[in-house]
Image (cartoon, rainbow, N blue to C red; front, top):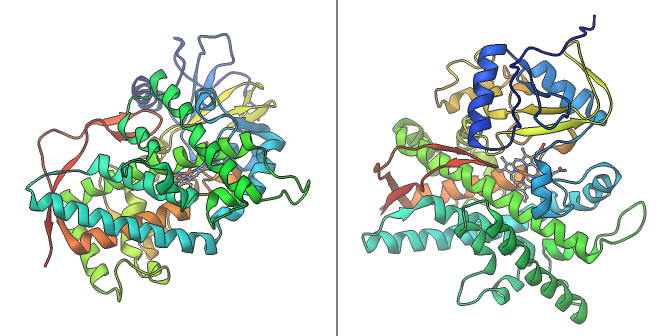
Length: 431
Ligand code: HEM
């Protein structure tokens, strides 16, 4: 039976975005009106719909995905990323996805895993040196550089050092400049020249090292046999850099916070890594780290970096018995769904045990989606999981990390869900 009216909601208009005001408002609206809410748009567009129930989530991401495209909010991301995979839609997205998918195959990840190990070995040396000097560690910043270095080396391999000046890569500006303002847009666009220079050099010398950039440059679409243009490669490179580093770094930062507050969890992590034959763990040994994986899953439940996802209906669709017009924007917040009391027991409690093999079976798959779901699910999921497993296995083996509690941890819900202040720790080498 179809209802004629819109879902319940307030009368006052508001334009939802990935910002603090929207974060608070969505939480309040869900508490007041339930799992499907309509919110008037100030711009004369159809009302925005917020959903928070697994049945509706399945409809949007799976059943009705053909009637959906990326929603509002991505327009702003487009200014940064051109028409890269994360923002494109339709046939162009399908073609790009076909061409990019092989970059996430096991054999490629295996090579990137080596890079991840090398970067973490250098990081631990650096943190040990800081501890000897009595310096505290800015975990937020350092893990952001780490995640950046990993994706940059995966993309540019031997050209990474070539691009850098005195050990500083020009892309590090993305970790230094944390404001998401116009200044960043200008700086971001100016980084394109390094990618273009690198591509031109490779073409000129017919030099294609075994890395992600070469894959992007050389791959041919199976259907059209065409390669990507220079601009298309550039957009995908910039997309990968942005998509890969801030999300992973934000999660690593949250995990350090949880480990420092939960001695028992840290002890279980150490038990697990003590059983490893080699550390950094070999690619094959990653499957012997199920507990670290549970910790990652639980941190992603509580603080999913992409806390607000949106889709725009391109056709008229029915959702929960309501008719939604084409052009309606639908908002889904993994942050709130992951804490829905009907589906999660003690949702505010950090408990990696809920992702143990026996417990995880009971989780409704449409109530947990830090990497989104359906066709637009994150292709970098395994890349990120490997990166985090290597990091925690190696650092926890070599260092004791103590949280310096100078300021309370405050959430900053912008494009990614981060901590408002940088998170500092004191490292102590383990013997
Ligand atoms: C903890 C780490 C990560 C999280 C939580 C995360 C989360 C997400 C989410 C939620 C989306 C989908 C957005 C939507 O449905 O609108 C997405 C898309 C994407 N992610 Fe990730 N991501 C992570 C790491 C990575 C890494 C390491 C890479 C690449 C190496 C990557 C590359 C991408 C790309 C290219 C897309 C666009 C896919 C498409 O639209 O077809 N991500 N990610």
